[in-house]
Amino acid sequence: MMKFTPRYQNSQHKQKGVALVSVLLAIALCVILATEILTEQKFQVQRVQNILERQQAYWYAISSENFVKALLKRTAEKDKGVFNLDQPWAISGMSFPVDDGLIEGEIKDLSSCFNLNSLYYPDIADDEKKARLELFVRLLSNLDITAEVSHEDLAVNLFDWLDKDDYPSGAVGYDGDMYTGLAFPYLSANSNLAHENELRVIYGFDVMVMTQLKDKVCVIPNNNQLQINVNTIDADNPEYLMAMLDIDRAKVDDILSNRPDDGFNDIAEFFALKEVSSLANIAQLDKSQFTVNSNFFKLITNAYFNDIKFDLTSVFQLDNNYNVNVITRRFGGRIERKANPETE
Image (cartoon, rainbow, N blue to C red; front, side, top):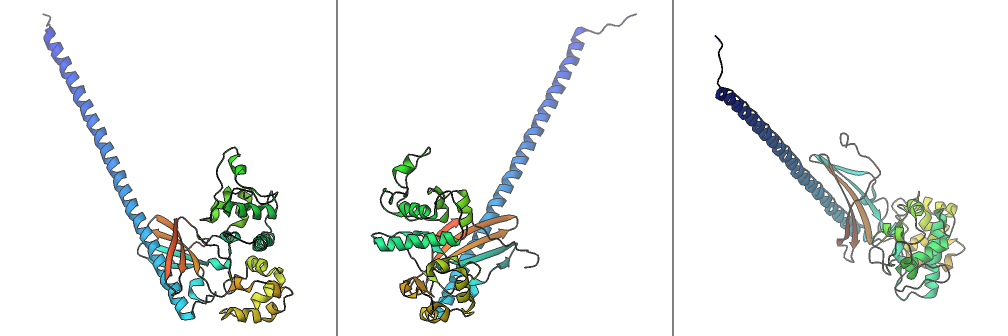
C-alpha cells in the first residue's frame, strides 16, 4: 500500500529550510559587521598611537631647540659674542640617544653664507646697489652656477623681486607685469624672502639653478644684514669669502690655512693677517661687512621616536645681551649624515 505525504508537511519543511538560510545569512552579516568594527577599531588605535608618537617626536625636536639656545647663550657669554668653528655648537654629526628614539642636530651660522635678503634694503643708494649686485654675481661665478640666463640677470631678477616697486631694473630686469603675463600668472613679492625655496618662483632660478645653490645661500628672515663671520667660513666652502674679498681660491685658501684653530679674537686681527693686509684691493673693502660675531643661526633637527621621524628647522637670533630667541620655525629639514641608533 502506497504512503502519501500531505502537502502541508512539505510546505513546513520548506519553511524550516528558508528560516535556516535566513539565520545563516544573519549570522554571516553579523560576523562581517563585527570584523569591520574590529578592523576599524584597530586602525583607530594605530592612528591614535601614531599621533602620540609623532607628538613625542615633536617634543624631542623642541627639546633640541632648547638645548641649542642654552648652548649658543653659554658660548656667547663665555667668548663675548665671538663665534668660531672650534666651539661646541660647530661640532658636526651631533646625535643624542633618548628613550625609544634619537635626536640628530646640525647648526649653521647664517653669517657664513650669503643672505639673499641683503641684496636690497629700502632707500639703497645706487653705488651700494651696484656693489651688492656685483657681489652676488661674483658668488654665482665662484660657485660655477650654470643657468639659462646670465649671472647678472639672476642678480637683477632677485633684486627686483625684493624691491618695493613693480618696475624692472634696466633692460634685463624681470618684475611686475612680466610675472602677471605668464601662462600661470602671479605677483612679485616686493618684500623679503622667508626661505631659500622662494627663489624658485623668481625668473631664471629654475630647478637646475636651485639644485646648484642648495646649501650655498641662506635667508635671514626680515633682515637685510650683509656681514660675513670670517671665523665660521668652512675651508671646504670658501666661495662666499672669495666673493666678499674679491680674490681667487688660492688666496682664500692661504688665508684660511693661516686662521687660528679657535678663530680670530677680533676683526682687526683678521685684517692684520699678512695674507689679508697684502691684498691689492684691501683699501676698497668695506670692513664693516666683516666680523667675528654672529647673531643668527639655523638648526636642523631630525627627531626619531619608535618608527616616527619628525623634522624641524629653526632660526635663532641673539640679542645684545646674548639672549637667544627662535624667530622662525618650519616643519621639515634634513641632515645628510645617517646615524646608527645601535652604536650612538
